[in-house]
Each structure stands twice: as C-alpha cells, then as structure tokens.
Length: 98
Image 1 (cartoon, helix red, strand yellow):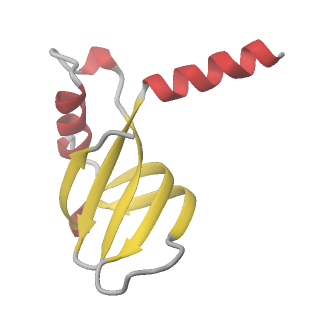
Image 2 (tube, rainbow, N blue to C red; image 1 turned 90 degrees about the vertical axis):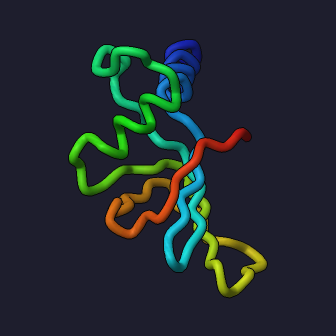
C-alpha cells in the first residue's frame, strides 16, 4: 500500500512544474499541472507551460500555493492546497526552481 502511494506521488510531481504568477495585487507560487506530453510536439516544460496558458482555457489550477500581497508584506502568507486562477488577471508567469 505504501509503495502505491509513493508511485502516485511520483506521478503527480513528474507532471507538474513550480510557477510564479504575478497579478496586479498578488504574487502566487504553486505547482501547475502540465498537459499530456502527446498534445505538444516538443514537450519541454516551457512549451507545455505555453500550451497550458494559451490553449483557450480561462482558468488554470495550481496546487500547494502560496499567495502573497504585493503592497503589504505579510508575516505568514496564505497557503492554499488547490487554487483556480483566472488567466485574465495574470500579468506574467514564469517557471521557478524549488
């Protein structure tokens, strides 16, 4: 049973990348689930991120997020397990390393 959980966790981490989203009010970091590799011809993380942001969806889902206000530095930023972001409010998005 423990091995199945480890394999499931490994599969989830292989299909996600850590991203930083910047909106007018917030900096949001979290794990973005990538689309299936067969959808993109050259499946690098950058190309998969481009596809995820430009495939016509209005929202993307981030997991294990940290949401910080730009104007007010918070002692403890908000941590959210699952967060949907409307792409209309995103100013920029970049891949970050852990």
